[in-house]
Figure 1 (cartoon, one colour):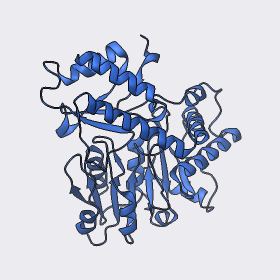
Figure 2 (spheres, one colour; figure 1 turned 90 degrees about the horizontal axis):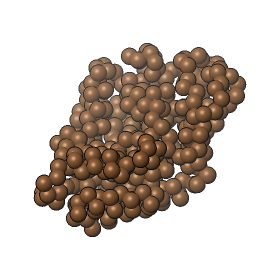
Figure 3 (cartoon, rainbow, N blue to C red; figure 1 turned 180 degrees about the vertical axis):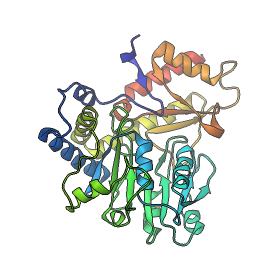
Length: 363
């Protein structure tokens, strides 16, 4: 079995769309070449369609999803500001860490892992924070939280949504849901290799940009001036040409399929995983009604694996069948599996192969 036979069904990178892989081999262009600038602008247009927004400041940050998170925080809050963060997994906790490093007061609204963010508890945490921040689709638990309800009740505060595991795979309507800032990653439902962080910022949020944020590389001011018509395109950094070409192609494949069709495919694959794992004697970890389609969190009942450790099962899946699934993090390490059906991976044939391999390993 070669590495190209791998079926990536973990919580991290999933199998990319073939179009995105092929684009990585395109002839190199300079980062100031007019042809590349036109492709970058078209990539941003495609991101607006997928985010369902008209935000002018929408583009791929030249780094992975965590840099999108940092850009979304350091440009808008600092000392003297209060940020209310919904924490129901690893990535809500990471938001708290980033916000605290800016000097802002970060109020962590802690939730039991496996549960969605409670909007009323967020609102009760502070009467008027500078920002509410929450994870739309928590990668560590497979839980989807109600960003739309938060947007409808946030008042004058900014709303930041982590959409790393939702963009392109589940319903996400940035403008309709009153989301001010949202970021994602390329390696999940967008079906592109890791390396970029799609980001979108509302005009309302642009008005609150910190003039000199703590990060030079992630400073949005120069880019914002260009997209809002206040200045010429600035040379900020050397863009990752091949990755942006790949994102352009991956977004093209997604939009050719159609957002509704792609979301339905992700839902069908996620439903099949959950049903099949239940048939094999496993339990579902995420709260009913808030289970994420592209990432299924599976509880391992005591005794279900016999004398075989859960890490050994995952290792055998990878070594014998070329299938990757993820283990739990933090308090659910060793207790939960995370199975991704994202991007090109979200297909019934992959689910069927996984379930058959597990049944074979477990006897």
